[in-house]
Image 1 (cartoon, rainbow, N blue to C red):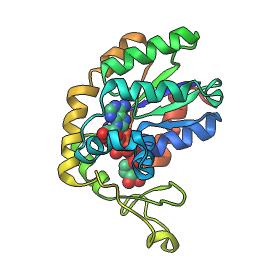
Image 2 (cartoon, rainbow, N blue to C red; image 1 turned 90 degrees about the horizontal axis):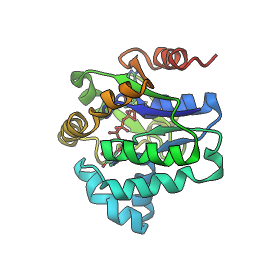
Image 3 (cartoon, rainbow, N blue to C red; image 1 turned 90 degrees about the vertical axis):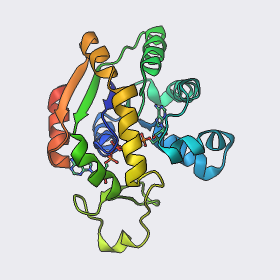
Length: 210
Ligand code: AP5
């Protein structure tokens, strides 16, 4: 199954994409994770994207499209994937459509996680990551076990100011993808304000996964 997770920053795309990919047995592909890893490794890609990430700005389309197409060409993506954080602009969505059309493997579904803006800042500023396992926690909604608490880190773009800029970018650049995918008949709206377990359940129902 080929699925895209769509939604504002902090909507729970990463949290849910991990669950869904595990359930479907397909890779979870997060452009945000790929860029953060590249930045950490100080690779040429990392040097190109660092300032965009730190400021909460979008990485240029050509660069993101190149990175994603290279990843989707890898053998493990042949049976499907869960894309998280891509596409984020109309140009990216059109490029993805062209790429998948050439492969004769169109998208099965786009899951839109709906969370109102007023919840987003709290979710983002309370997020903590375990650098050893990649596990995502929230200080209030998904508190980490005491034994990992001391090694948790906060993303450098998880400040309130950067979060508001990312939210603004989402409304301007990414929200137009909602009618785009609705017209294609692949959009599945899911209430992202429920508990993480309930959201997972709704997503599986929306996708018809037993
Ligand atoms: P990216 O990493 O994709 O960031 P994002 O889209 O802003 O999304 P987040 O990772 O912040 O949130 P999420 O929806 O995954 O939520 P999460 O599950 O963590 O991108 C980062 C940057 O990379 C961009 O700003 C840009 O610069 C660049 N970039 C990436 N892709 C790009 C592209 N395609 N084009 C251009 N630039 C690109 O959850 C958030 C918190 O809430 C966590 O603490 C979690 O525990 C908690 N939580 C989750 N679900 C629930 C729930 N149901 N109830 C309560 N709490 C919950």
